[in-house]
Length: 241
Image: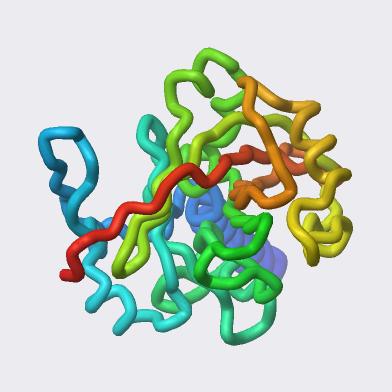
């Protein structure tokens, strides 16, 4: 009887330990947010409401992680994060943070097929759809056309410039790798333009020579991705900090 009682107590302790560890992992999985605001500064604007200086502490950020090459901000959403491209395996930042430590929220990242200067016809950025609304979770809000019309700007910060994109399309795509499926060697693949136009939320002329930014996150099912598309509209030169 005593042995049976001890075994029961040990099993209870083990089950409690498993529950605590599992709970901690689930908490981190759904509530972590990358902890990157320590690198964010308050941006300044001139009288025309144009950003005139760099809002990112690039010295600190690049010292922490040289894989970081840009920062994305979508006003009106919680999207305000560093962007990395892994020097390790392709999807390293799917589950690693800016300090290269394992974290379920990962980082916003691009694949090696894309140039870091956003000169490709289509640049694809990936991020998790976190339950606490961090990373790319706010892409879900673009299901509402009124939200799209009100929050249609994307800022991409780099050390010497800010790239401005206008959001014009949002919806779902299949989960195939966009950069593998479509041919962007001579500009935007006409097949991709057709796909993008299916989800167009506002009228926008698209030519093969455009530069598009596609934000991609999971859509709740393995076969679908939620995507938001922006068209490059201008470049702002900034003061280096």
